[in-house]
Image: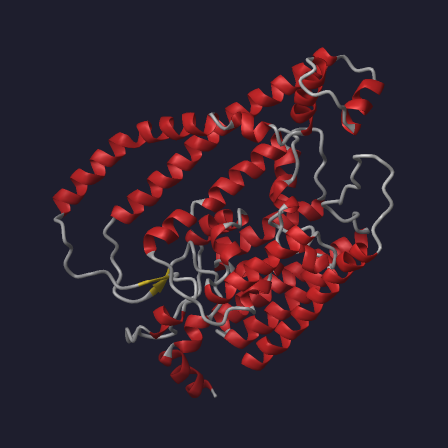
Length: 428
């Protein structure tokens, strides 16, 4: 399997050279300047595909999810999952150009609730199918179908285990990212998941230097910190984790009785295996219940504090909206705070739109951001509270078991399990 990784890394580096070539050519032959501040926008989404290709994408997704579930739960084949990973990179990555992906479809689904956007059936299925499979078989989409996760999977060489406190803090970022993505979509301020996708530039072979460096940074970090985007940034992973937690079936480490050799725990690159419960706890059950009661009583204060704190950032985030930023620019020009004008402000004056209308719309957007950030702060407070309550619980585990929420069903633990090897020899 190491040969597969080395070969793919060579291909990946070659693709990186191809991506950077247009940028170098642009430096050698700079575009002529016409004394304008206009910047050619880069589209966040490719053109809609024809019905046949849309149905083809759905069919490939359904087949891929089925194969991933088969390899993870029935066949218990790490090699099968890895080959499926390479196939997903080629199809959903370079051929499908990473869009539309279930991760970005969060924004489309959110936008559909506004009533002004009719969401295509293909987008609904891309959003729902991985969640349905997660509810029945765990996060098999993350195992080998997601092109973003697959690209990170192949660069894992020397994974390190992060300290538990740091891991818990970083695990809050996907919830924050999910909330901001919904907020920006609701306010009409843009699709930030697609805008800041670190790997779409590789798949489309067109990327700005900044996004190219961001993608390369994630891949380099991924050599030592396995799947950094999947674990600490992916907003769709939050939804998949919840569905996987309640999954009917899930990947198991061993097909038979666990020998507690700890090989699976050491082999898991994302630290998603729970060890057996300790036989003796440092605190009594009564003390634990008392601490839990005190913490639950403090939860309302946590929610109000975080809600208020997040709402104070409304000015910062609302300025990312085009209407708000334009209103601020017009106000600065009207009050002679700034003497020059921009292309946007000149275009606004030519439209003969009332300044009061622009200010009114900007004020409405600011109020939406303030309310949304209040709710986001409360949401993050609930997430933190639930995480703390879970950590305070006394789990009852006799063997090493996958963490159903965080396990990506990559199958590495099965590969290292000696019981799995014995079972394979018997079936051979």
